[in-house]
Length: 374
Ligand code: NAD
Ligand code: AHE
Ligand code: ZN
Ligand code: ZN
Image (cartoon, rainbow, N blue to C red; front, side):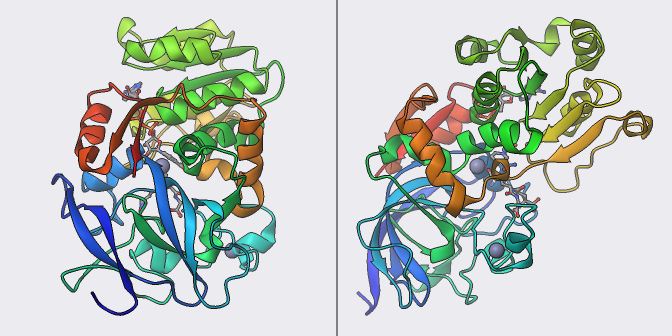
């Protein structure tokens, strides 16, 4: 074994649509401002599948995917002060440096301090900490949680209450925070508002939870897979609709159901045609549609500009607008206080060796979240 490295079991994605393989890789110990984290659990998000499909313009291989994790600090690099060995942490694909123009603006959670290198699969110094037989393996979204050990910049870690089970709160590393945050921070849904949520995976169902917490009067949940409806109803959906049951556009159905359209809609699929429906089911004059879903390379959205001229608003959100270091710990506290459950989402748990099954279950529409236990 090389000096300054440790061995780690990791799932490697070698190229688009190739099954991941489990390898024993070398992980370099953390450099200045970096932290070695032992991953305890990681959810599998549709964005991992999206990048694996080859549709992600930033997709790069070979790579260690995974960005919805929970772990424990194993070692800190020089100058790290905000976390210590033993701390429980959630990796952040949207870091929070507190210093960049974006952090200082107070208008966004999209810290850009390390965005460029992160998008290239590298640490901020432009190199990778992962290798297999001397060949570099890329990082993913600054997280790479499908590895027993991973290295992250200090600014990419939220320190959370150690009382929270990491096997559950890992879901706050992406899906649940994204959906709830989109409703509460981005849209700012208020008591009595009407809401339509397209796509009832981990993101859409979390948006349902957010809308129920905000006391929306009507929560219309839309999916082509009706097996999602039971949980959507349990979480607070008032109406569940399958677009395949209608011979007219789903936006027309929703406009009729809601006396002119909803106050807010959320696209949680990544389908540009559904994004149009989500905009056009909004109420004239004020309805806002929030894009959460991630669409593939070359895809574009379209609508008649008249839709916007007449007051509808098209917006988007990443990580639910949540600033990871300063705001995510509070989500963990709210979970611990019983404000929302996470176990409803965990339809499957498995070891890293079975990770390809998690992708299969997702594509078959059989899972909400598979959580990998290390
Ligand atoms: P998922 O695969 O678990 O759920 C998607 C749901 O959409 C499924 O229930 C599926 O049946 C449904 N669906 C598919 N096509 C449909 C259609 N034409 N009409 C209605 N329903 C349809 O995915 P997920 O993990 O919940 O992620 C959802 C999307 O959000 C993905 O695009 C993902 O990349 C994106 N995402 C974005 C952010 C962000 O920060 N913006 C964060 C996480 C995930
Ligand atoms: N890399 C893609 C876009 C992927 C994307 O939009 N990612 C979301 C998070 S999805 C989490 O499941 C995001 O945060 N985007 C903001 C950012 O800075 O990446 C592409 O199209 O190039
Ligand atoms: Zn995600
Ligand atoms: Zn910043």
